[in-house]
Amino acid sequence: TMGFMQFAVRRAAPVLGTAGIGAWATLTTINDEWDEYYTPSSASASSDNNNAPPEKIVILGSGWAGLNALRKCAGPNKEVVVVSPRPHFLYTPLLAGSAVGTITLRSACEPLRAMVEAAAGKAASATFVRADAREVDVGNKTVRATTDEDGMELQLSYDKLVVAVGAAPNTFGIPGVSDHALFLKEAQDSAKLHARLLSNLEKAAALIQHGHGDTVEKEIDRLLKVIVVGGGPTGVELAAELADFAHKDVVMRYGADVADRINIVLVEAMPRILAPFDESLANVARDHLQSRGVDVRTGVAITKVAEGMATFAPSTPRNASPEDKAKALAQAATEETGALVWAAGIGARPLVKKLAKSLGQTDLRGLKVDSALRVDGAEGVYAIGDAALSGCAPTAQVAAQQGKHIGRALRDGTDTPFEYKHAGSLCCLGSGNGIAQLLVPSGPGSFVWDLIGSDAVGPNGDQRTLTGAPAFVLWRSLYWTKLLSLRSRLSLSADWMKARFAGRDVVEPVLQRKPTIAQPHERVESFGTSLRRSRTVKFVQEKAKDATRSKIL
Image (cartoon, rainbow, N blue to C red; front, side, top):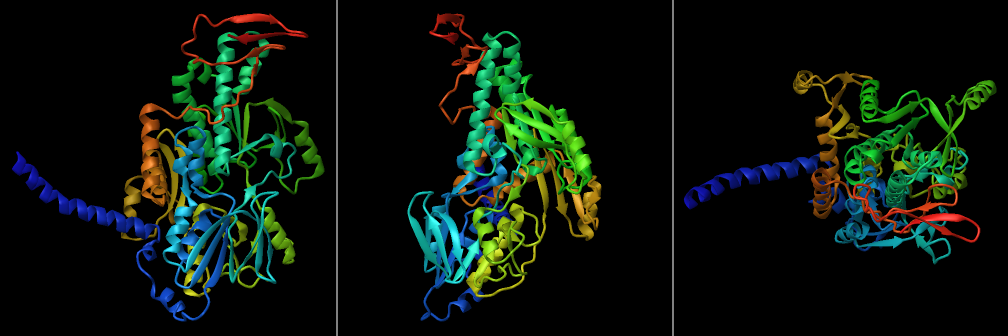
């Protein structure tokens, strides 16, 4: 037996080794990362003059664009400084999963200092400064930054500046959104949403078990209603994650009486969801969400948000007449909600608006750039990702490619036109489902797509569709390969396995509790599970000075 095992190992080792090398080479090629393992001749040539002072490169931002610029610009005779208020890189496509406990936030974040340390090994120096960039002086080539609103003020000089600060949520000036809505843009947004969901579930479970009367029923319905505004990939993926969470984990942890009353509403002002996708795929996504109990409302806009309330009205085009707008507003209706998540678009950050205005731009949605991503009217300044008006869609795929392009241009001392290479679009629909629209070059192998029933879509018919489990596996596999460290890959894999076999994380990240209003002058709080209520728990009436209140002992 031992001899057979040794024989099998000897035979299998070359096969496994070859497969491993092949997988590594494939991932390296797909992610365009070969220059991580060798120094290009162009980079060596740009640093031949060793007597020249190091070139000072300042990168503002640590998102998809900024991080990839950092990784590629590090070269001999380069001093790199990264300025960002957050000390990590955030895998934004994983935020929807972290909001419901499918994964932990640790798996969606990469420590920025690890990336800076890796860059320092290739550059003359690399430094991270945790601060907010407030102003750019293009004449003196300096950046003013502060550690916080009232903290230390810093001034950084640069030879080359990369503006990669991303974008902020766009509220479109709708009253109450900034004050009362939740967002899904940063790590803390995911933690806040996770806390709100679990807190509302606990309150609703307590009321279902112990409350009574119409007031209680209305409060339960309010607590268990989640409105997601925005029918793009972020909103759709969040609605799908919420539906999975309700169907599996809420049933398991809180009981079917709570899960059955959860109401998830997806709101989109456009006639359909998922505008970047072909309409056939958007219809697949809509049908799947509806089959999971999601209320998909298209052609509907939010006109006002208040504490625990949202007002809906039929959406109108920008060029609609005043009469049509008044008619739509006359049909407005207000609904109560336990959480409203705003995923309805992005807008320029204050730094970008201020810089664009100082350069004489009238369009303040971003910084105008040329084909090489150089900012018009600002020598040595580049803008990439969502901060740039480059004509490309504001996606992570675009930002990552632009970051790599600018990083290599700075490393090699060249300014070449940026060419975006679209690979396709993916959207996870939860419960083992997804949709994909992939760019497939025509050739001898294209018949394979016909054999599996994939439709040809796109303006030129050069894109293929994929739905169901294969698209779901592709979505997870792609973002798993995009992780930058073994630690993150192991952590994400463990989270997915845990969620699949042991359920999602239902530990509320915020421990401060607020009482549930059961009835006027009554308070109810839950400290147990809805499935195992102790018979010793009961209402005890206590006389207060001005009112009667109830509490659970």
